[in-house]
View (cartoon, one colour):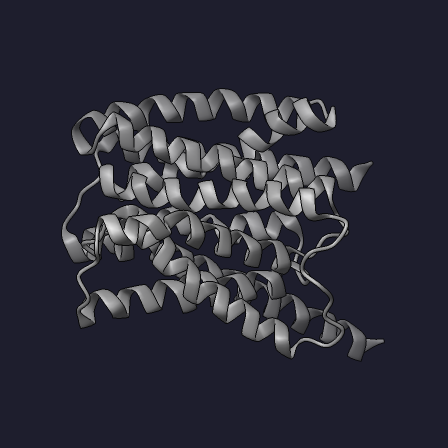
Length: 294
C-alpha cells in the first residue's frame, strides 16, 4: 500500500513538472515572435510545420496508432480551424501590440469557453463563471486602455480573437471526448501551414541563422515538445492543478520580452492582466471544489 502511495505521488510530481515545463516553453512565444522579422502569417506557418513533424515522429513511436481521419472528421475540421485561427491571430497580435496585451487577452479563453459551452452544449454557467466574466470584463477594459499606448487596438482585437478561438477548441474537445488531442493538434498544424503558404510567396522570409534558429525553437520545442509535455502531465494532475501551474505562462511571457527587448507593459495592462488571471484561477478553483463536494 505504501509503495502504491509513493508511486502515485511520483506520478503527480512528474505530471506537475511536465505542466510547469510546458508553461515555461509556452511563455517564450511572445519573445520568439518579436525576434523574427517576418510577416506574421509566414511565422505562423513556419513554426507549425516543424511542430507537426515533431508530433508525427512521436506518434509513429506510439503503439496501436490509428488513422488520423475517421468518422470524427467533421469535428477534426472544426477543431483544426479553431486552433489554426488561435495560432495565426496570436502571432498577428504579437506583431501589432505588446506581448503583455496579447497573452493577457488570450488568457480570457476559459471564460469564453463557458459562454460557448452554454450556447452549444446547453451547459449554463454557474455563479463562479458569472463572477469571473465580470472580473474579466474589467480586466479587458484595463488591458485595452493600456493598449492605446502600448500597441494598437487592432492587435488587441486579434489577441481577443485568439482567446475566443482557443475557447472554441475546448468546447469541440468536450463535444468529442473520445477523440485524440494529438491527432487533432497535428491536423491543426498542417492546416495552419497550408493557410499560411501563399504568404511565403507574397512576403519571402529573410533566411538567416537567427531567424531559422528561432523558428526551429518555436516549432520543435515551444509547440511540439510543449504539447507532448502537456499531454503527459494532464493525465497525472487535476484540471485545477494544470490551470494553476499554467498561470505562470501569462506572467512570464512579458518578463522575457522586457528582459530581451525592453518592451514595458503599461501599468493598466499589468493591473488588467492580474485581474484576468485571478478571475480565471478563482473560477477554476471554485468549480473544482463544488465538483468534489457533489
